Amino acid sequence: MLAIGLMSGTSLDGIDAALIETDGEGAVRALAFRGEPYSDAARAQLAAATALALTFDRPRASPDLVAAGELIDRTHAFAVHKLLREAGIAAADVGVIGYHGQTVAHRPDRGWTWQIGDGAVLARATGIAVVSDLRSADVAAGGQGAPLLPVYHAALTATLDMPVAVLNLGGIGNITYVGEDGALIAFDTGPANGLIDSWVEAETGARYDDGGALAAAGRIDETVLTAMLDHPYFAAPPPKSLDRNDFTIQPARGLAAADGAATLTAFTAASVAEAIDRLPARPKRLIVAGGGRHNPTLLRMIAERTGLVPEPSDALGWNGDAMEAEGFAYMAVRTLNGLPISFPGTTGVPAPLPGGIVSRP
Image 1 (cartoon, helix red, strand yellow):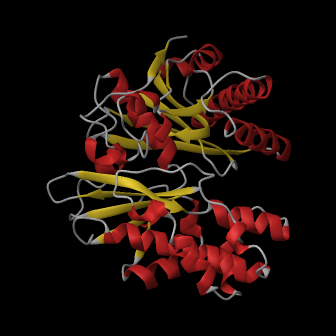
Image 2: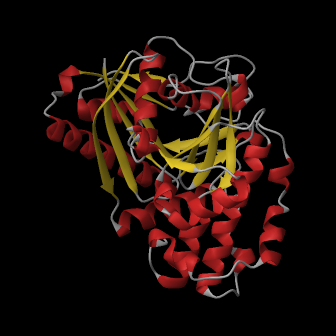
């Protein structure tokens, strides 16, 4: 069926909307993609909502979080309509939307994860069935609730020579390992672009380090880097996952802008290297998706620390910007078909588990 996937990541840069045709198993065909950036006002509102959510001991309603949820619903509905118009597809021809929503807090250690965005509202606004709240069932069953993309990565890599690893460099990094027998292992590697973006915005006012130029001009502070790598997260065995705010730029405070960017970029690369060392076997290929694949300084540092050549996913004919959105479209179809979206090796859930709540228009 035709399916739309929607993703708004922890970087708060905007909405990714992708249209694919899939059976939720081996057949996947990408059809259209649209990126819809958030306004500065929307980014500020969502950042404030996230900061507020992190002060709560459990998800609960508050005026600011309700308003942020309404913003998420409204902007995602607009993104769906624009995508359909550009693709020349009628809403009636689309079987389902996979609606990730916006993560404002992720606390599987406390038994909950919180994505704002109401699937029923989006279903009414688009006239299309919506699968939302894709992480909560996994967390309720004792899983990490993340990462969820491995099942889609497995479909994309099915024809490659195994084992392979797919590295997603968004706000948080995550890695999927597909073994020779198709076995899946996945976990969050650590901050990817999140800390770098926060540092660059605080130091220069820019939203990100364009082309890794600032980091390339700086020197890595090995003392700061070593201290950051001493975080207990890296010693924990997978499966494991992170919240965007589990790490901060505070250890780099006092460094020059370029040196801080270089150090935080090296931190991302070192966390990827640590993750690869935890895999059952060395992957034959390291395929990179997400915004971080556009940062040559980061890719160079990953290559130096892993001994692998990071391959941007676009070289395989995949759209690295669309992959997460496509993945949630794929998972929505699996949910409609009663198929699992998370697995013991990817989130730590006891058994393969379906997920998501279906809302009909």
